[in-house]
Image 1 (cartoon, rainbow, N blue to C red):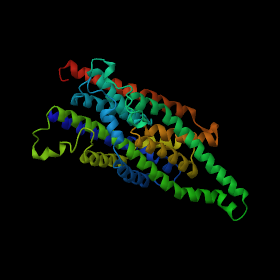
Image 2 (cartoon, rainbow, N blue to C red):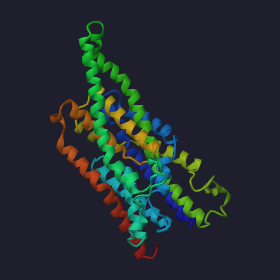
Image 3 (cartoon, rainbow, N blue to C red):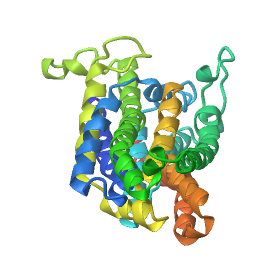
Length: 373
């Protein structure tokens, strides 16, 4: 049993590393596309800010650990978590190879739901669809409030916020043009590009921070779920000295500091490895971006991610930045959007949860058939 717990932790960290390079594009595609930073510079900025963001809160991790699967209905064993992670990893690698910016968050959620559903012998009660607490939004748990609702609303919010921010910026520029000298000089393209070239460094850092705060926590939740299960089974009662760090510091609602630090460092390392295929899709294929556009898209996306993280909602970084870019492009000129590329991205979004869930479901059934479940 202890060996399986260690396998889960290693598999979770492999997923976190892949998440880092798979979702690097979410943090840096726009700043690379606008040529404010070189790819190498952008990756280092993203890795650093990912690391900082990962330490800022654990609300999303707690949702993954206790808010999606009903542990009173299904025993979340190490085998279930291994299938969860393999389902998410396989789907991430498929979409990375195809250059599609699919959601690592939803791949992990889909994998967890698929594996838990299989382990419960197809009992829908194993999945928490909705569990209201004291009426406060932040206390609502389950797939409905923490996954389904944000999955629909966050892309829409990203699109609308992208439209709103770029429209506001253009209105400010138009006002400066009418103001007469010396303010009108600030509205010239040379000055606008120079200003937002600097401002985009801030928005790119904000985006990297938001990415770390959201995505690193999801793997923390999986590791915590494994630790909680092992603790309940008594597996961690007599640990050897070199594994004593595995025992939780506090109760079931706490995420250990070693889990937070390890996930943060591994995600930063994965981010540093880069993900050039998806960078090309997000930064170049959907719509041509200027520095002001990149600033608007990054600011819109990061704001959504940070807000969702505060409420413990595992929102997709991919969805928010992609739709923010679409919103910016739509506000500038709807005809400039490349609908063929957008259609491929949307299909990847739709398929992610069922695909990763199906892979995890099949893997658990295979393990069950050979007697290893």
